[in-house]
Image (cartoon, rainbow, N blue to C red):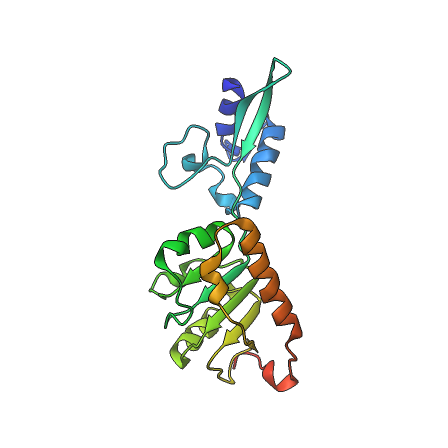
Length: 210
């Protein structure tokens, strides 16, 4: 197992060309990076190595001992991103979400954001859907400038401004505060999706960014 982790730590290149050995491990490492949406250029970053002591990162892949039927076997552990279903942007806090629930909601794939700091658009958001609650023109303009970093399916509740490609949706968010387990989260997301499916979208509402 230790030897296999040493192979995982080997750099991608040797003397400017692809290393000549341990390609199978390298293939698994590349696949793990892809699933984590990590740039291939970061493959040799030591923070992703087995045994790394980084505080905010986990290894791409590591060899582990797996005991089965009283036998010690070689296994591999990879760390995946948590699912991201719905991104809710609610600067005016219209949803009245309890602060202590925000972290729990993320564990169920529901990201609730009520502050758009300068670093908000430093990353991309791969959620299935995005809902913007009662936005003002400044917020929508920021989203327009960073369109490629936002989810493709965009909903808006409250104020609507005709220069954005959002779908208007009327949805009650009282149940957000009632989510206390994965079953409740799935029920909420299902209701949101079904409500969105019922929306009749006129051509004039699907206006591309100007």
